[in-house]
Image (cartoon, rainbow, N blue to C red):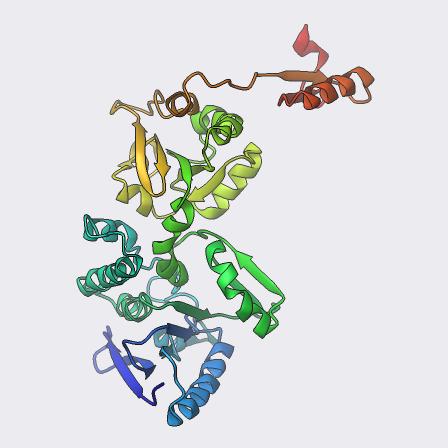
Length: 410
């Protein structure tokens, strides 16, 4: 228990002489205590109801601090975005984007994961609590080495530096028309169930990665690799881009087809990674009908960069994309990688699904390639499909006058 309250002010650089803006952080309890809870409001500064919530919360915490009832360590950023809050133009508050450059205030936070992998090399051991302390220490060291140049960068840096080691991070947003809802990662959902019940929250949205590296995912993405890999055997294949020819015609379809065989030989999940945003990846997965694959976007290329696989594709108008490769990962440890040879163009020789399956289970029985040509109302077609289904044989169906015509078969 503690009755400590400290206000910390961080001055942000200004492009205008004589002007200044400050971030205010309010800290309750012992800074060394756990759990640490971080809350902020109005990162999108036009979402002002959160400011009222924080004002009332601060009053309640003041009362608790007076009576020594603060447990753990609580940090508030009551006004997370003073820059956006000052953008009142033409009769309206313009708080979502920085008017100087059009940048979304809740995008492009530092992805610490690639740098953290280097910082942690050979440091982690079997003590989980010590590993947790090391990871948090590494995050602080990396952020301490950054030199933000602009006011927005300084604001992002200050917010992330105070939130990155928290046990719980709450980023309060609102909308013009919305029911109360909570957005979090799938791995966090079980632990947050009690909070949802207490809030009587009717809706919870879950996502691994939404894209753009917003504030909340900059705090949580460090732990997502654990969510994906811990205690699991995972096959990952990475490719240059969604909706591209080889990726769409061969790479994804074959992994999707062989996924049941992988799982029959001990693989828990098959994952496709590409340097595309979440919306593109989701739509591509739907278009491919690849229900056996988990699609994970690497929107900024941070994962691919950390793997040493981000390559320039400017000659194709793609910018930076992932080189084609596949890997088998067991409990977070890479067992085997198949990396395409360093040849011009887009080589596709070793990262395919068959090569990976031959490594995991040489001689494994593979599904038959079966296509059934049908027409609407044909009882023989229906019986043939039923027999294939009973035999557990997957098939592709082409329907007359929808997918082909009689001329196709002549």
